[in-house]
Image 1 (cartoon, rainbow, N blue to C red):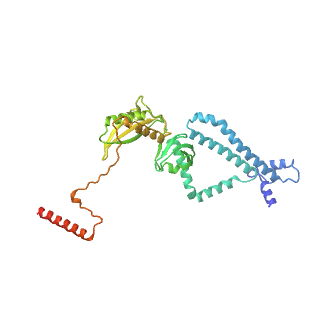
Image 2: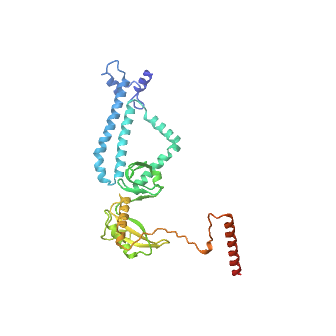
Image 3: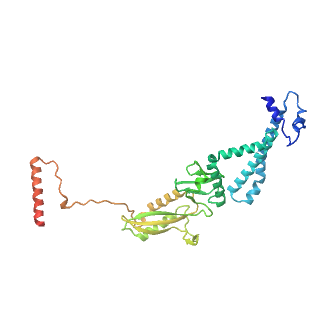
Length: 341
């Protein structure tokens, strides 16, 4: 096998149409090698060295052009994608040069890759779809690295850790990584909680009884929300589209329910990073201050009423007493029937 391998490797660098006996650079360098070292070993070592240099050079090139690209494209996801592409291109070129050194014809490799791609097209279709969707995500900018998003179908909150052409990596609030293919990201509802303006409006429903002082309850709820850290206490109105909303906590009468009056609190938080913690703190403040006002939390009550027509239940009666009770009950039913007639 070694003579065959060496014979094929000795064809390196031979241009098309050049005679086979034309001296080559590998043969020139082999003149300086000991006679017991075959030329194909030198070619193989040279190819490995070229590929290694190209690999480390790709990292160096990425560091050199990284800052310029970051200034040109301010989005981290686009910057990372371009830098990855440049690094991959340098590695591929160094690999192609290494293959050329060891005498592997690149034309045959290209033909083999084309045939293999055609055969494996159905298998690679999901990957290709993810790549296309990754390009759409980079162009549409639904979210960016560092944004906090909410996947409504899975009720998952997390931060965007990385965006590639194939997938999006989400660092959840449960301290776990969630890798989502870009093809499925565009098919689901993704709520971006920190895009552009990080301020987020939230709601909280409080059910109070009809006997409570509604105006006092609304004021108490608003003051309790404003006293929590992270809640915007007031200031200029916040603009959302063409509408403007008050920045301070505001409590409204949402509906008159079966068991009480439902009051809905709307409040804004400066950063959407501790939503559940903020909501819990507001409810704790309301619970602490409810005694300061004529406020009573409502909850469902059930009352059972017994009237004279409901009948009686006799326990522990003997046979004679039970018979007398049944006769009295029958006489009573008869009298009531006669009165009705």
